[in-house]
Image: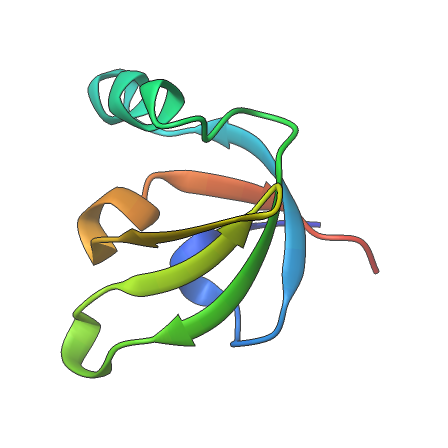
Length: 76
């Protein structure tokens, strides 16, 4: 099952399947956020402020607009 990173709950884990926007994908990949990376949502800021994530062992904060372009593959 695939879903957007912004749609999953805190504590959920998934694997990055692909990105929706090529421009933002380039920025994310230079930060080390690659397809196949494991993602865990640590915290979500209120009012769509952003997400605090653990990606392949690194803690990263992303804006809501950036996170909305990440499509995850969720294991059932």
